[in-house]
Image (cartoon, rainbow, N blue to C red):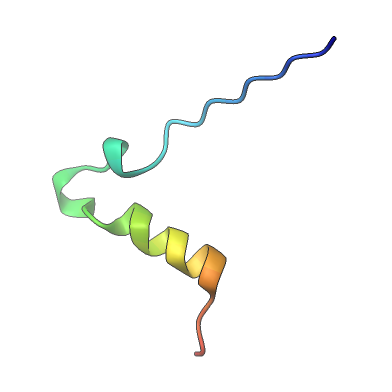
Length: 36
């Protein structure tokens, strides 16, 4: 049996006040791309 746990402290809970929405924007760009 093998077990791997990877924890990355990233996302909207770790955003500062001046970064609000950045994690959501990056998620959309990473998975949906851009026409430009």
